Image (cartoon, rainbow over all chains, first blue to last red; front, top):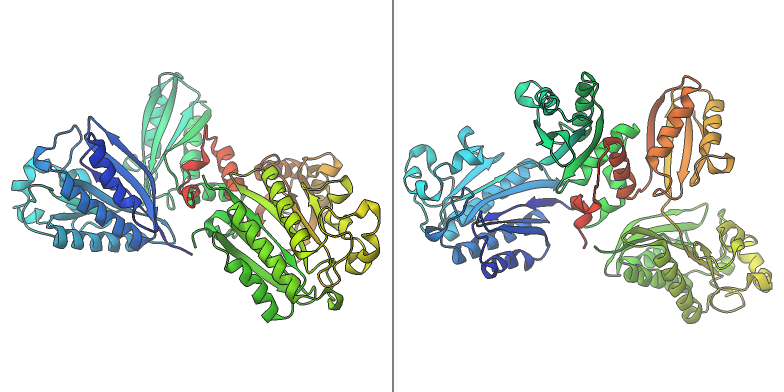
Length: 298
Length: 298
């Protein structure tokens, strides 16, 4: 089976189409890597690239993207609504198929080392690649942003994991790491009472005693006039979509409220949905290789 | 999106490893085609190849396989337990992704024409490619087998669709066609009473008034001492796996028998399982392109 990694670099240019295309071209030009999506936001002055491919190929494409961004973006002149600290701001590696989070952590470290040494950019490892608890959270690392980092980087606890111990004035600093695919899953309720959605969200989510890898909030869908439980699943192999769905139903019963629908937002790994089919169909001993499409790209 | 076709040629050699490998090599050597599986049966003296890829590429690989089989297999000396009429016996094209059955029928006709003209082998179109109702069923075409076809081919109603009006002594005749992917799905019951499985099978299957695209029989799993409803779904987009599953449960209730498990046998298209996840999770407006893996091979 072929290993498959997703990588979602964010870089700090969302206005100049020509620069954006030149940076994205680095991904397009890398063999063995597929550009799935990229989008730019003018207010944020930021672009997000989604690519997928073999681990070494994706790592190579990410390096080339970071290098090109360091050449074409000048952070000393950058402004935008979104918090940022570098020309390439953040680069997560995400395991998709036949690859562990640990292997993605290795990829993050290898890439970070190369970016530090060859491009002279300070690099911080985050999420599952973090080297200290306070570096797990991206927002925590990025606090102070580009402008504040010229001082922050001098503090011993904010010494970069790779690269120089001082800011790169043109390129800033870059955060690289590994995380499990996040699934955005929303469950629609047959009620216009947002309080019910909020109460269910509190039962579902980890922070209030619910499912370990679920975050949840109540949201009002004003156009349809229904309340929704909006859920993020950060480890679908441990907290599955069907588990969240059934737990919402269970809690909704208390209010006599039905589940009227659900939605998956954005991309989702095939296995997250097939796990649900397996559960509901009570399939025994299913092997993901029985899925025709899982055999492609071997 | 890239079109994806499966093709499952059956050829009449299951004993001579060297010949089998040379024939399968024709698939391996064809660019844009992936050999998913092949297996040979000595008693049947027959091999089955499963490949997948783009329509033109798969058609090319199938032609090369038929050509090689016509060179290396001599049907006048062939014997085996499985009914057969040609060196390459039958070649179905199966739509997998972004391709219609009609397009697969076209592929079958194009391949049939080429095999008839270039290899001088009589070709019959079957299943969805059939040119007459009595040619839909493979067993019906093949009746009389290789030995009987020297006479059968002379009957006006058995004039080949392509190629010469007489048998190719060395290569026999070949059946080519298109059919929807077949899903083999079995539901295990919490009872050792085969009569209950048979009764449920009769309610499920088309022939007795059940689901249009379902075939079903009761089977005893002697090792586990439980009865099973063994189901074939021949059009999963119209008669879905979850429909069969829920209908078995519904009928089993009459006997107070639970469904204790299920199994998918062999390969299954991703969409057949994701359709089930969509149903049970009540997902609205899902687009198969949201599945990461569906974007590969574009």
